[in-house]
Each structure stands twice: as structure tokens, then as C-alpha cells.
Image (tube, rainbow, N blue to C red; front, side, top):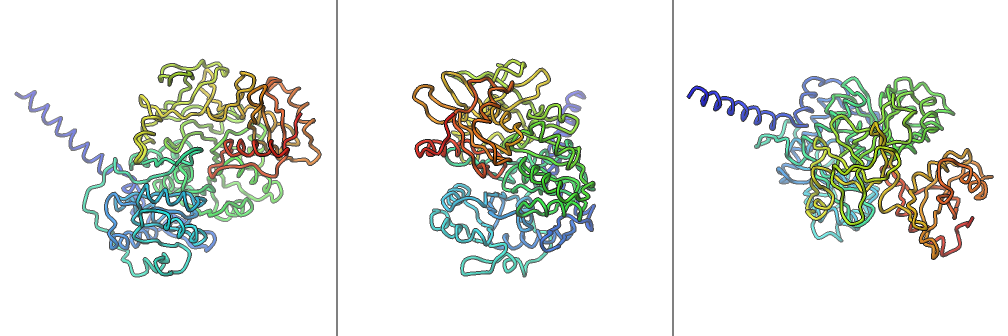
Amino acid sequence: MQAKNNEDISNQKMEDFKKIFESHYTWIEGFMRNVRRFAERPAMIDPETEKAWSYQELNEETNRLCNTITRDGFKKGDVIMVQTLNCAEFAFAYIASHKLQGVCCPVSYRSSAGELAYNIDDSKPLILLVCSSKLESTIEALKIASYKPKKVIVVDGKSNGEIVAYKDYVKDASSNEPKVEEAYNIYNETTRLYTSGTTGHPKGVSLTSINEVLSAHDVMIHFPMCHKDVTMNTTPWFHRGGLHCAGPCPTFYAGATLVLMKKFDATQTLKLVCKYKITYVVGVPTVLEKLADEQDTLGLDISSLKGIVTMGSPLERSACIRYQKVLTPNIFNGYGTTETFWNTFLRPFDLPENAGTAGAACVDDDVRVVKVFEDRRAEPDELAATDNTEVGEVIICSPAKSPYVYFNNEEETEKKYHAGFIYTNDLATWDKNQFITIVGRKDDMIISSGENIYPTEIEAVLNQHPKVKDCIVTSVPDKMCGQLVTAYVVRADESLTPEELDEYCKESAGIANFKRPRYYRFTEQIPFNATGKKLHVKIKDQAKIDLKNGMLYRI
């Protein structure tokens, strides 16, 4: 009987612990701890206006929004959609959603009216927050969409009919804590991000509060980052890397200071590092290149930097060495997905030796390269050889940072997730230390005369040429070979010719002769998405048009 009673007591204690854990280990609890701990410390700074918010003031401004949208009927599970640049109102909306157990749904401010209309119909936001620069497109989207938000709020404009200015919307609101009827829960959906997607409609990635807490922890572990840091993410917050890598999520959870960067400017970024003693800057590789160019010219004191973090694509060795010399020795590089945040990581001690790779798995993640079969999906234990030669598909198990579900899309959920892993569609090799090298995507792979060719390996070789600033590789149809490798090149020196590049590729030990480009075109810029990834699918379509119009140079 005593043993039975002890078991009952133990079970009750576990239930009590579970209840406390699930209701208190939330992102908003972490933020509110910082409001109490660091009330007078700066939480956020807007360099354009030189306005700064302490943690107490940030909380009060958030409460004004909370109390206003509550008046308009916002309740648990409701959505506030944000289509703005990185701005203070974005941060207020993000925190407010956590406070009211709603969902913050950032969408790309580069979206077309039709794309925004799709997002609106899919997520059905009660509140839509937009920039004045997007207002015309927003109004068009609202005409197209079947669902109509209750309130459309412009963050930097004037009230006009059904559109209300943010300052007018919250001007009479109380800064008192809003009433929350239900206990918080770590499994509540708090943020919904849409994948950038190369084909079809984007997928909504539903993140829970515990996903956000552990994403913040991941950043704090790997940088590391604490309340004494000052961060600036130059990438859009509507992306996972923008929001969760030194963006609002980890910065406010750690109690650090966030400096706003609405639109990236290299000179301004370096000056802000000096002015605010920024410790971490986040940007895609092209951002690092521009920062290095400007720093070479300006020579500013940026010694406050503890590190610069880049994502979106791998760092090449020569570029990495330059950034370590010109910017900071502490360069970081992460790889991951919208669904799983970052999952492999290169830290300063990994570089420059492992530059070009995507790094090895993060502390809490299991990242593998599995075999690729024509007729089926590989199981997680069907591994590609760790010889840096066999190409397989990258799969990721990241329960800390991934919800393992798409919003309102069971078909894609079943297609993408299997046996506890997300199948990324990225192709890679890996070595005995499980450092992964991305070679392309399944849909980017070039098949020429029966041989598999991966654009990234050719881009890496071309980018080593001293007269090449950047390049992107794709293919065009060919009757004899099926596809022919085609390179679009941004010149660093106008004297560069296709013949010079062809000779360079022939002599290179980096690629086999049959992989070298057979068509070239020089261009002023390369298409990137908002996260800094090269848009191979877009350049492939362009290459077909250019071939037809005789714009490609045949070697």
C-alpha cells in the first residue's frame, strides 16, 4: 500500500511539474522577466529617429497595442499579419501576439498584391500591419482576397478612410498589462512564417512558443549572446533568420539591445557599429562583401564586434579570409531552413579551414546526408558515405526548433516530414567529421550527357578567378547533351572574357572538364531572394530566353 501511495505522490509531482513547465517556459515569460530585471536598460534603438526604448518602455508600447487590438476583438489564436520593414511597430506586434496568445504572421514586404492576397486568405488575419510604401499594393491585395481583415494599419502614414495610422490607432490606449484569461502554454502557436518557396504557393510554418524559446537558446549558445550584447540583423525579419538570429526573438529573450536596420546600407551599418558599440551583426554573404569593401575605404573602429553571422549560402575560403582580416576574426556561418532555423554551424575556430562547407550539426540537431533513390525516399539510416564524394539529400531532425507541421497544408506536411526528419531537397556530401558541403538542390541539378553536375561546385571555381566578383550557374536545353552548363558572371575587371574563363576552368583541379560552362553571359547583378540565396530557378528561366534571343556566348 505504501509503495502505491509513493507512486501516486510521484505521479502527482510529475503532473505538477508538467503543468508549471508547460505554462511558464514560454517566450513571453522570458521577455517579462527582462522587463522586471532590466527595466531601465535599452531594449531597442531606431537610428533614423534616434528613439530608444527601455525594456519598460518597450513593454508599455506593446501593451498599448495589446489593449487596442483587444478592444477590436483580438483573442487567443487570432492573427496579426505584418508586412513592414524592420521597424518598432513590427516588434510591438511580435511581442503583443505572444502576450495575447495570438499569432504574429510576418510576410514579405516584397510580395505582389496577388501573393499578399494568398497569405491573407490562408491565414485570415484580424489585423494587417503594413508600410506606406506598400499601401497601393495592399489595397489591391484586399480587393483580390476573399477574406477581409478587421483593421488595416499603416505604420508610417496617415489615416485615410478604412486605413488607420498606427499612431492614431494606439494614441488613447492604456499601457497597463492586458488581461489574459488562460494560462500560457509552450505548445501554443505564436508565429507563422511563410517559406520563400521556389515553386507553387508558399507554405505556412507554424512555430510554437517552445520553438521560439529554444531558437533563442540556440543563438545564445552558439554566439554566445547575453544581456550585455547589442545586435543588428540587416536581413528582413519576415524570414526565420531575420527574426530568430539576433532579431527580436533571441535579443529580447536574452535581455540584450536591438538596433533597427530597415534597409541595408554598408556605410551606415559600419557607422552604427561605432556609434552604438554593436557586438553582433547578421547578414547574408553579399552583405559581408559590401561591408568589407566599405571598411577597406573607411577604416572605422569596429572593434566592438564580437562577431558577424552570415546565412543563406556558404562562405568561400578566400572571401572568409578577407572578412576575418578586414571586419573581424569572428565570422560565423549557419545553414538551415525556414522550418528548422539553422541546423549546421561554422564558428570562428572552424574557419577558414572548413570554409565552403555548411558546417557540422548544431548542439541539439541531428543532420544527416542520406542516399538518393530514383523510386523512393531514403530512410534516415540509409546514409551516404562520409567520403565527401557521394552526393545525397540533407535531412534534419530538429524538434527544439521545428513544429513538424505546415499550417493548413496536410499534403505538404506528409511530403516534407518523415520519421522525425524534414527532407530538405538540398543535395550535399559530408566527411568523416560530418561537415556538410551543399552542392545544390534536386531541382537545380544539371544532367549533361548523363552526368550529374551541381551549380555550386562550378560557382566556387569561377569565383576564385581574380576578375570575377560573383556568378550564378544554370543550364540551357541541348538536343545532343540534354543540358549545357551556362554561367552568368559579374565582372570585377571589365577586361575579363569568356575565353579567359574557359581556359581557367580547363586548368582548374576543382572541376572535371566536362562540367565547365559552355555558355557565358556577363551581367551587372545576380538574382537573390530576401534571404540571400541565389535564385537558380529564376536564372534558369532567363537563360532559356537569352538562348532563344542569342544573348549567350557559346564557347
